[in-house]
Structure formats: structure tokens, C-alpha cells
Length: 128
Image 1 (cartoon, rainbow, N blue to C red):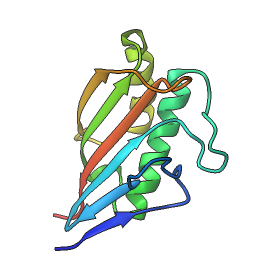
Image 2: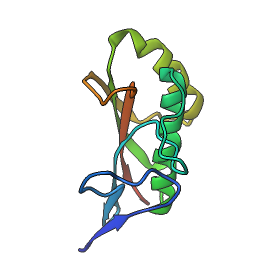
Image 3: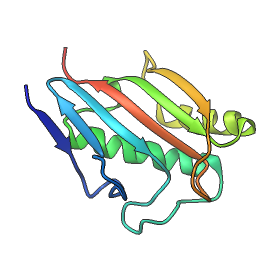
Image 4: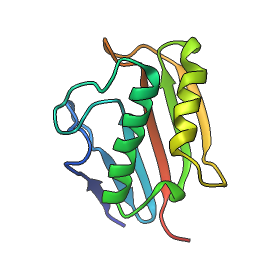
């Protein structure tokens, strides 16, 4: 079974040697997405809510390019730079991720490049 790179102009172009997403069979892994506007390459907003919504929009774009949707996501990993941002991130996340059953989720606290407050990746299984 071949591994296929998923690439779309509707999500930011990676600045390093990695794919926006990779699909093998019915498994689709979306690389960590941050709050970059894919058209400008600039950070969207200064709040964790704004960046969370943009990161999730980027994830949706990669999922769609790979033949999937948020409904196919089993697992999301959220990386925050500050534990105090959890509530605001969670509120913004819940505005976008609304379909039951919700994906499993892990949130960890990390360092990210200057200006970035959140990064999110996703694991989807396409089809039953």
C-alpha cells in the first residue's frame, strides 16, 4: 500500500521537510497546523482563540484535500505555549469541533516560535 502526500494551497506551505498530510490506505495524518493564513503566510491574530480557529481551518483544508472531514478525525493533539490559554483555546475549539462523538484529544504545553500560541495535529480514518 503506497503512502501519498497530501498537499493543498488552502493550508500553509511547510517551511521544512514535511508534508501537510500523509495518507496510507484509509489512515490520514495531518501535520501540526498553526495559525498561519495560507494566502499570506502571516500569523492570524494575537489571541489563542484566533489562532486556534485558523489552525483548525488549516486542518480542515488538509483533511478535505485527503478525502476526509472533521467527522473522520479520531484524535487531535493540541500544543499550547501557556497553560493559562487552555480555556480560551477550548472555547474556540468547541466552536469548530461540534460533531458527536468528539475526537479524542490530548493537550500539552510546549515552546513554539515567537508569536505562535497554539499548534494542532489530527489523525483521521477515512471510510468504515
